[in-house]
Image (cartoon, rainbow, N blue to C red; front, side):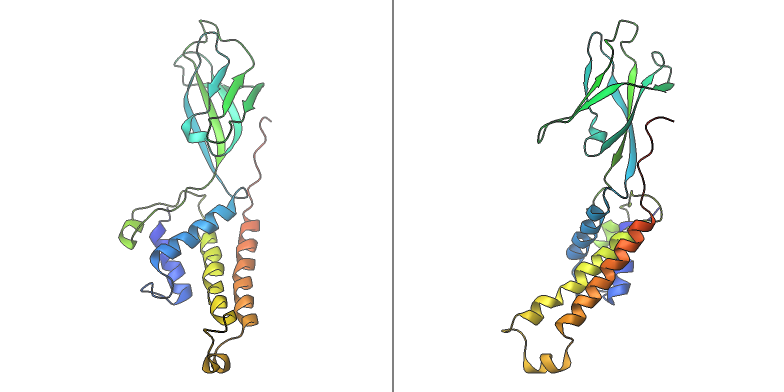
Length: 217
């Protein structure tokens, strides 16, 4: 499993910035998180929770905390109390919550005394968890929880962000000296490099695009 440290290592190598002097560690983390955000919804993680339990005569249930941010893929119902076996529900409604509110799952039947206590299993496509490591040491124990093989994609987006940074210095006439103008790269070169990394990001992202699975075969 990839760690945040491995992603930082790759970014350091590409930037030739082993000591985080060109792009600070917090900025690297921020750029990687921007890349992770940009991967949604083409790349996601699948989360399954079973914390919702049927209650007598209750049709509506709050979506469990583990499924709050994503898209509901399926809702399964335990076949009988404490069986641990599930069957797919054919009919249910998802009622989105208002800003800051919890979404609701509404089942299409009124639970009886026999149903009470049976669990609902809610499967959803969720955003990849953002990185939170505050130091390289902490990054070594923080795992990237996206699909295996996609950990390099946020690095490409981070490179796009990092290589764009010099453009501001170029276009600010109060910072650009004659020597810099003669010996430095021009605006177009900086933009071409940044666009190159963004194109690499898009290409890698499109190659692993994950269509949402069908709800029922």
